[in-house]
Image (cartoon, rainbow, N blue to C red; front, side):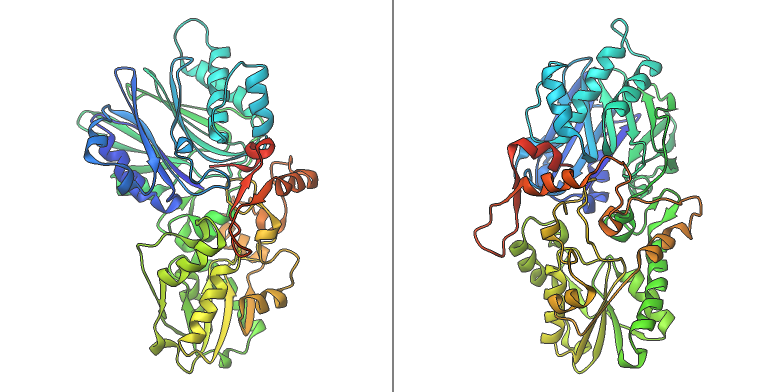
Length: 508
């Protein structure tokens, strides 16, 4: 999962893009990059690390221009330590293009082979984002007539790209001397929106993964970019848009609402915060059926993502709500950290249980999800160590039983605690006295209740349904076989792709 930005401004954009990346830092803590354009020349700086660590004053001064794109990324199997795979990527022909991508291509291995053998393009990293950039560059070259571009040609290139590319992708790109291009895959899996700001010098445009970046930078949210749609904003500020897919349908990723997106964002017309509140309401029904509410003394969230669901659950059941865990905000998100042993250590560094809230109580802990189970197991033990009498656990989302191939780093069944386990077995594995899950239907209704036009979702890690239609059992078996354990011990599950499958596995 990553965060992307693209801007056409009337003033220098380096600080604007930097501030925007800070607002999207939750979407990626592994690497960051900014590419700006001035007089048809690109300036680029990217590196591994948090935004505040990647950019120094000297780097910012070297990013001139009134247009540009930016990217934050989170660790992805096989590439977390390779700074060459930080984004944006750049290709010099045709015209000169930079690109930043959020998602994962499911046919990247095939495309990479085509790039080399048919299109005569060389891919230099294991990133499917570089593949995507080269597909776009090739389509621009094929569709262009003469030495100039127009919106029709650019949209024709995106149409050609969408005919070749499979998977999930939300992209921003800049074409040297022309402007910013943004497009979304025909299934609308990854989020993308745009907004405007009116200035004395004219209208400015900002494209972003989440609306919180627009609002935080003083832009007014206009709308989400639709599935299969491309928008192009030229350097003069003229806005163009076109539907580039003949079979587009909106299938937003449920994990955005469950975990990844900031609660103050709107995605496809739905408040993330309101969706999480609604998840708490539905979860309260499940808890009420599974547990006797008189056995629960207090409801506590696992900060921060689950807080709205826990508050609403407690309110619906008439139970006390308490903050029993104090969070250290200077430790990264454990779900996206590389390796089980690193995640386990980080849980204790990130959370501290306040014994005054736990001692002698039957506690219901509420989390947004249970993925690998490492964090949940540590948290349950922390509650017991703090003096809890009994520890019940509730998840605002269903069991994560299936691999995700659309940009979330949970691609193998062996990494998922819920795969091939019953709920009771999962409960035993995390050490809880009882475990309650949200149902798949209730999770989806939590979002569709707020926007009835949303009738389909990408929820493959919960329901095993892959909306792109190109994911077979053989593909998943190949993908799993292509990951090799490189940890020093049995508890270390950090994995890398084998070279022949790296493009199928790696996604930004």
